[in-house]
Image (tube, rainbow over all chains, first blue to last red; front, side, top):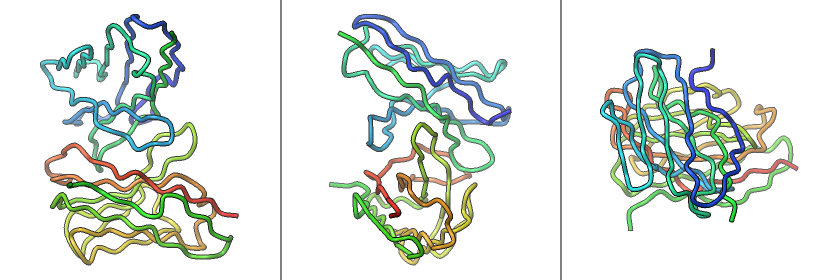
Length: 108
Length: 115
């Protein structure tokens, strides 16, 4: 089982839609979880950290389920500018482990 | 402005040549990292360093070398032993290392193409 797995997509959604991404991780000892956003041919940028109690930032909500070992990202009222690849990131026995990313395309 | 810089943005090299990618940060971060990203793939860790004069191999260190003589600088050398070096190389830094995982901040990356 890969350390971090994400549905690669692409997710093609209309503007205003709600979209959710899931990410599963294999290391039950993982402590820290993040979502990064990566635009085409650019570096990843931190979108939000994921706390045990969940985390909300505007239209974005991240949740952690330790029992099932997955984290999720919910984007409400999608904008064209949300089009990007979203990377799930987990700490394991080495520095951050990155998923391959889920590509989102928001369509007008 | 604080941040991480990488140079050059694009780099072309002939097969069999060594090449060094630059990474500098003025964030006063202790830990620095090098990743490689191939099209449609996630980031894979090449080397990381938690303090000056110390570094560890990541998942794909073969064919690469690094140094950490200064806190601000973590150059990566892609040697001729790296069989498939064409990729997007990303440098990152963070305020803490393995003991207290923290968010990483990335430089803009260097696209290396072997001709």
